[in-house]
Length: 85
Image (cartoon, rainbow, N blue to C red; front, side, top):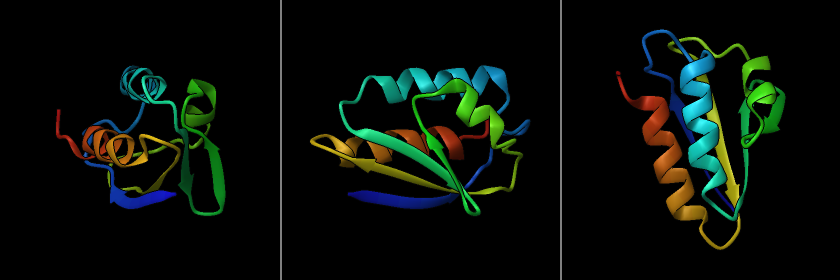
């Protein structure tokens, strides 16, 4: 299992459009992906789960991946969360 904690830099947080982009990216990986904010953990391939976290800019998020491509998955997904677009 690979995990990395990041602070979300997306100006509007992880609202519908960036959440959709995150899920699309996560679905390209065979690893199990999850996001954790505080004590709540959701499936990283579930748009509803991600939106339920209400992730705003500045939120600390733990990205976890477990599987064959876990290293690349965590690297790619944390890059999305820390981009400033």
